Image 1 (cartoon, rainbow, N blue to C red):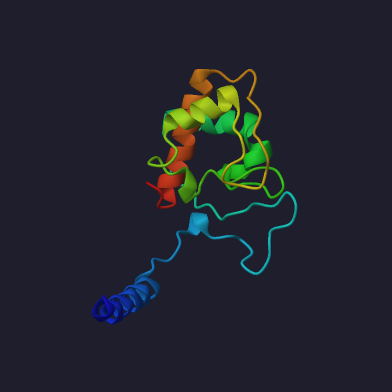
Image 2 (image 1 turned 45 degrees about the horizontal axis):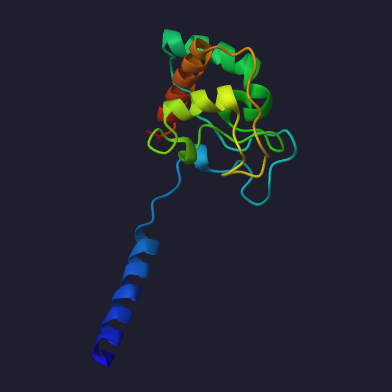
Length: 148
């Protein structure tokens, strides 16, 4: 048993050093705008690179997003300090928050679980078609920012 402790400790130190050395840099969409302090109330939380073009469905989604979602989730889904999280963020990548989670969030609301913004209420008057177009818009923004 004692003969295993030293090699295991050495392996753990090597693994930790490899992690620190090879850790990937964050994508622009997950990098806070002000690295030394939190953004001011109402400011964007992350920098979002815009795609060159949007599909027709994403263009419809942008209009719906701007009228319903941007008040809390910010312009181009960059988040809004004090109001709502950025949707162009690795937390909302399709493998963690699939399209159905966006649809359910709009219909039923969401209990706060990743961010400090509090609960999201259901979005009254937003149709399933509206939300699907919004999802297209958000996913195209995510892809433009390296979130697949």
